[in-house]
Image (cartoon, rainbow, N blue to C red; front, top):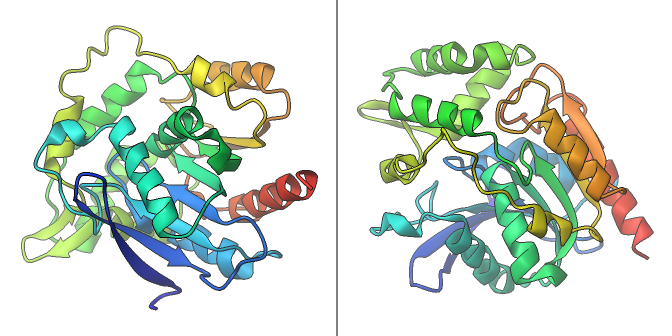
Length: 295
């Protein structure tokens, strides 16, 4: 074990080798927590939150953080059509029994939140509680177009300082709440250092999966899948400056799921950094409340 976690590798249904991190492996008292990253992100995104939930929280929990295929330490897929929410949900469902997990609380950022919606349709009994970070049943096309535009034009910085400066230029207006330490941690989470410089830690072909989307039209929504989660304790976090997850969608989610709790992360866009401010404590407290109420 290094840095508070151990690495776990398992085989996907189609034979690809996939990776997850395990934090607090000996913690067995409470619900385990499964963390699911965003589109191009990986297990690094949840490192600080996972350390909190597995070691610093009042009720430490086992935490599993998945790298989807094509991200982090998981194998790249030669067929980019497999980079989709349905296949990735199937990969998570294959990983859970390999890890000995029957039920868990799930935390999903962006793409991870969409995968949680699919898990609710495929295997609802696995979901004990849900935290969704800056995502809902309606995705704002303009926000997704913004993501595609900066992925298409991603530069190749030579140094960490250049990489940090690049991220601040692209995202700084949406994230005035972030500190210098936050920006540097972000770069180390989403990039890896190579002889050529700091490069994104995902299969470049992932960007191609966004190429065929017509952003002039509304994107398909997931309201039926969301409605199916009505009995599951839910915390929805929204970045106050998010372009992807609107305040109107959050309001409608609360109307359909009356027990839903909400947090707005002021000074952050898509998607809020879950290790910042009071978010680690608020998430831990939500999980504790949900578990107490279930008994």
